Image 1 (cartoon, rainbow, N blue to C red):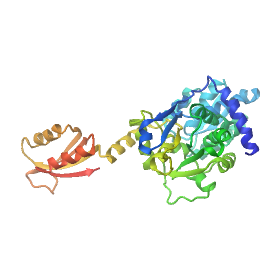
Image 2 (cartoon, rainbow, N blue to C red; image 1 turned 90 degrees about the vertical axis):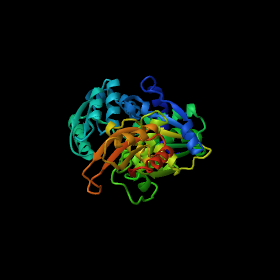
Image 3 (spheres, one colour; image 1 turned 120 degrees about the horizontal axis):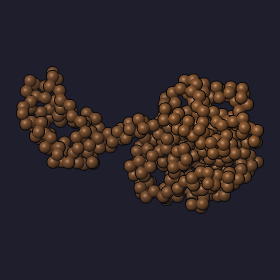
Image 4 (spheres, rainbow, N blue to C red; image 1 turned 45 degrees about the horizontal axis):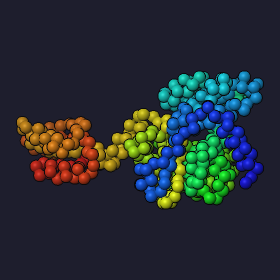
Length: 407
C-alpha cells in the first residue's frame, strides 16, 4: 500500500480512540429480511443513527480536534446544503470552536434549523452549492478561518474510516462491503481500515447515482448513458471526487456501480417497512445496489453502509405513496354506476366486505361519456395485497364498468 494509505491508516487508529464518548458506535444489524431477499447474509451498518443523522460528524470532529489552538480560536467554516453542515456544526460545538456554515438559499429549512441548533452561525448565500462554496472560501480568507472540506482531506477521511474498524469488530470476516460514493471520503476511509486488515479477502464496492456517476467515469473510466437529470440521493450528488480520494479509490475499491432513483426509492421504502429504519437517498443507495442484483452477493457476508437518515419529510411522503402505488397496495379505481339512490351504498358494501379501506372518493355526474342515468366515481383505496385486488375487481366487474387508472 502507498505511503498515503499507510499514513491515513495510522490516523484512523488515532481517530478511533479520540472519538470514544463523542460519537455513537452505531449498530451492525443482520437483516433477516434482506438476507432472505438476496440469498446472502446482509448486515446494515446504521450510520443513520449517528449523531446529527449521518457519518459526517466523525471526520469533522477529528479534523477540528487536531487544529492548533490558535486556529481553533479563529474558528472554522464550511459549505454544505446538508449533512456536512450539521456534522461540522455539532463537532465544532463539542470542541468549543465557533463555526460558520454557508448554505445555499434553497437549503431545506429543517437542515438550516438543525445546523443552527448545534450552535453554528448559518449564512445563506447563492442559489447553488458552488456559489455557497465560493462565499465560504472568501470568508475563510477574510477571517483566517480554517476551511473544513467535506471529503478531500486526510483527517476527514480518517474520521470516516473509523466506521471500517467498527464493522470489523462486529464482523471480522465480511466478503463484501458496499459503500455510497459522493466525493469519496467515506469509501476511502472505510477501504483503508478494512483492506489494511483483510487485503484482497474482502471486496469494497462503491455505489453512485446515475445522475452523478463521477467516480465511476473519472476513476474507473466507465461512461454512464443516459444520465438522470436529478436524483433523490442528493447527499452524493457530487460532480467530481477529490484528488486524495480518487487516488485511494483507484487503488483500493474493487468496483463501482451506478443505480437509478427507482431502485433507491424502493430501498428507502423497504428499509422503513421491513427494516424499521429511516434512510435518505444517499444512505439507502448501497442497499439498493444489493437488492438490484448489480452486485453478486449470493451466499456472501455483505455489509451495506446506511450512511445517513436526514431525508426531507415531503420527499419521504412522496416515496411512500409512490411505492404503495407501484406495488398495487394503493390504487385508484374508476367505476361507472347507475345514478340512483342506493347505488353508491351497494358499491361501498362490496368494498367493505373485501376489507378494503377507502382513502378518498370523487364523483363526476357531468362526464359526457356517461348516459344521463350514470355517474362516474373515482375511488382511492388501500389494498393489502395484489391477489385481493384481483378478486375485488373480478367481483365488481359483475355489476359495474370498472377501470384501474393508477397502478
